[in-house]
Image 1: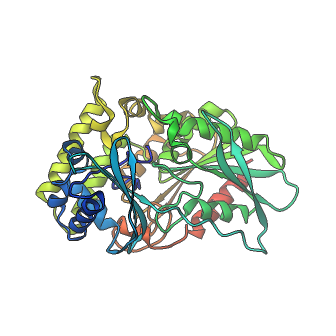
Image 2: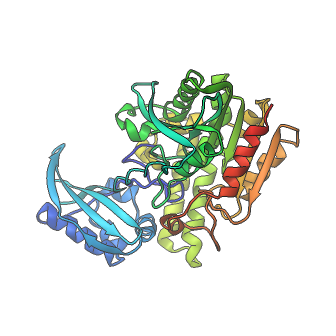
Image 3: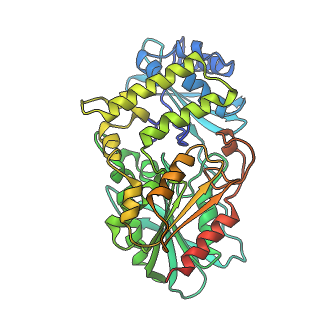
Length: 429
């Protein structure tokens, strides 16, 4: 799911393609922001080119904008020329975090592109001076170029049992930074403090978006790099190559059995908030849930859901179709390959230990997925299910229905969840 072409409210993908129109580029951008801030999404959509209006209808734009919280301030705008368009670059400060806006204005003064991306996350603080582990930088050499990585290594000679963390959807950094939270940082340091080494790395769609053009699949995006990460760990001094585990979050959990099958070096799997059903089945459910949080679904919101249904039907078809006419702007090759993945069947074929983790307040991966995992993986000695009623999709405790706004509240992954993972890994023979 590429850096500037993904639009999915519920799969934590923040990059959104949109458009604008007016006098100078700065004035056009300002007018668009005025309309968005006023909540007049229909007027904002009227500034778009036809293609962008189709890609980002008013209902979807409203849901995204509202998830950012109130717009508190606008930083200075600057204009650059790209591909014959005037592009306005402007930092925005919302109640829920800092966003960098990129607004492209075509020759007719229409918005030809709007990208809303979180400002670069602050560097992770160093481990505490008294920590029982250290961190060092590595590289995952795979695909078209290397990926920066961090190894959290317990103090001592080892050999240590180890975990590779595999991201959910979207262009994630090594900490899986999602608004105010960094779940992979929490998990890596939490496990390292309990004597388990953890490797986390920048996802290719974030570190090297230039590697994605034309046709590609989830293997180019996720699987191949995770297999390479396992190989790096297996050849790292101080690591026990007989005890390397893959802990996949969300989409990463869905693909973890596939990663293990291709690696041949994985001792066990941790499937954390992992979908058990097709992503194209989850997408409309997630968006309908978010649209209905205010108690009803408007006409515009229903039109957006209908448009998504049409895109999903095209993705599931066999006819050629442009990526811009498919969910999240992903090419047909991506969706059609993903539709062939049955994560439950893949997990059932994996004959080594599996730990499944699910939060009761998760609105992205829900009870239907949890039931399918339980039904498809009958109880056996090396499969364990752990359910946490108060946790959301990020493994963070809260109250009430889950929402995107919750991700903007700083929190930490449950120590109980991390402790359960550590204990499970240590008990494996």
